[in-house]
Image (cartoon, rainbow, N blue to C red; front, top):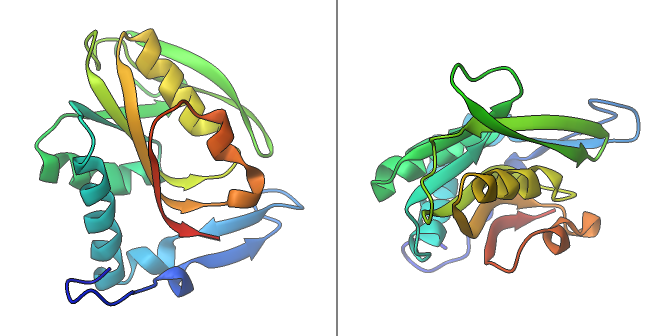
Length: 177
């Protein structure tokens, strides 16, 4: 919604790339949205508003495109940003978890001291497809003693039913493609 209350859609700024990164995958490219300052601000503002309705202590953003949204959200909400990265990319002691992708598997990790026991986390990513990446981030939060209280993503591919894999917390999405 714009401040005037009219519905605004930026779905036209999401480019579809067939057969990337593998044959049979329809990749959603957010680069055109990032190139549009108004559309990008719209997305960050809406995702920040959604996260701000949840009782959060930290933002947990998933590499790499989740950082594009998570960092400005954490700054606006005045909470720490906890990065979730691919295995081997963080310099300190980590907790890790393996998860299934739409087209394979991967391992992600975060610093073991990123979240303190009892802290409430909102997960942030650009896309919810099968739910594996966000479920892995949720697992890392749990391993560190935290609690996942919600998630916010730019795009949800509802036909892949990824939301069903996630815990019983609010999941806010801006676009359903």
